Amino acid sequence: MNVSIIIMHETIFNFWHLNDPKLPLNVLMSGISYCDKNYRIERHGENLFSFEYIIDGSGVLEINSQTLYPQKNDVYILTKHSDHIYYSSEEHPWNKIWIIFNGDFAESLFKQYIPENTYLIKDCNILSYMKELINLSSARQINYSGFIDEVTVILLKIVLRLKNQLEHKGAPTVAEQIKFCLDGNIENRIDLDDLCVQLGYSKNHLIKLFREKYGITPYAYFRKHKIEAAERYLLNTHLSINEISSKLNFADQHYFSSVFKAIVGVSPSEYRQNKK
Image 1: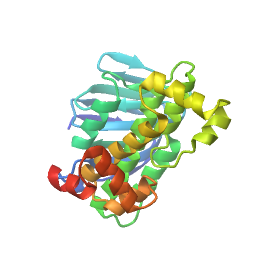
Image 2: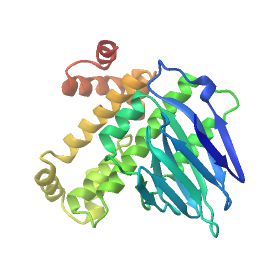
Image 3: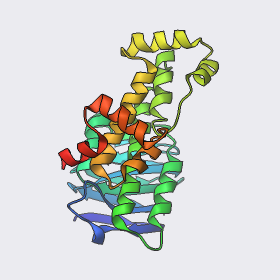
């Protein structure tokens, strides 16, 4: 590894020694950095991905011939095999939370949701998710496999949040606002009546606008993407079918299995078994 680091103070959680190539995701490190003007990290061609959320401060990221300026409430992304250097400003150095990871699941997330050569997402608050990662990392005793299952779920939430932020740089249409709400609540329940009140339109009009834009009703879209999330959890975590059903806020495991089979063609247990 070719890494050059100069820092003032940070809390680091190191998981390199637990790396398991059989897992679809491995967390290598996570932490909180309280930088000073001398903070600087340089890497060349490493097999890693990273999200770094700027709590406060400003600095510079040079990555793959791009020069970017991450500041408060921004997220910068370090991608696999990239050449990158990043450092804090002298006047207002960064405070930031970060996580470094790799694996097939990471590859899949970035390929599916993050446009190529995207390294900075402006004004995208993921602080609650990053704090959740740090809380998991700081546990005194960690079952690494279970830890990875929990992190997998949080990373999916982060990537969906970043994707939505990238898609809604301008003023969103009503249909885009509905989609943004649905995408951000895949693990929750959504009441379309509440959206009607929030957006000031009738239910029929919202459904019409959404169908015209995306070719599907909001309900069908929401259900489809819940099942896509379930597929990822079945393939990339050790969560039980009941736990996945609960995480995705289905009424019960039986209803979840019924919806899953109607969309995918097989039951959740058959899907997991067939993909092994």
